[in-house]
Image (cartoon, rainbow, N blue to C red; front, side):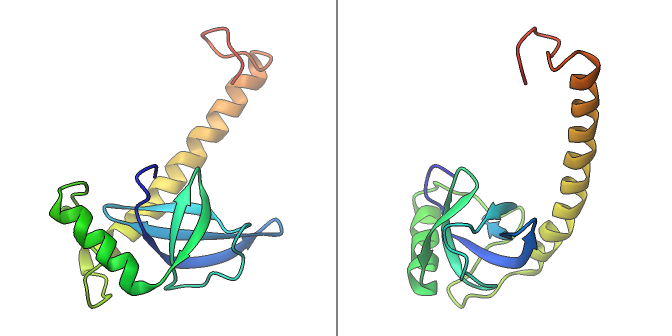
Length: 131
């Protein structure tokens, strides 16, 4: 998220004592740590870097920024829907969120496979470097 793309929090939970969230960005939803801004809630807007929410944005600023990014073709969210000026999330974004669960499950399965592989090789990957 190096471009500083605003995202809307769609779900918040506690994970091992740390507040976490799913944040909807144009075209995708990401798991984000709220450790620096633990008072963020569902429907708040934020800027994320390296998986951490760093800034709270008001809705008007977030939606205006997204519109400008679309205008200059910095983002293309036509495949999954987008946040509109009215602040509504289109149905396609809801479909993307449902797909996020499958992606997270796939990622967890892959992580379990990798950790088992690292265990078998003493923590050294096939390229000889540490993972």
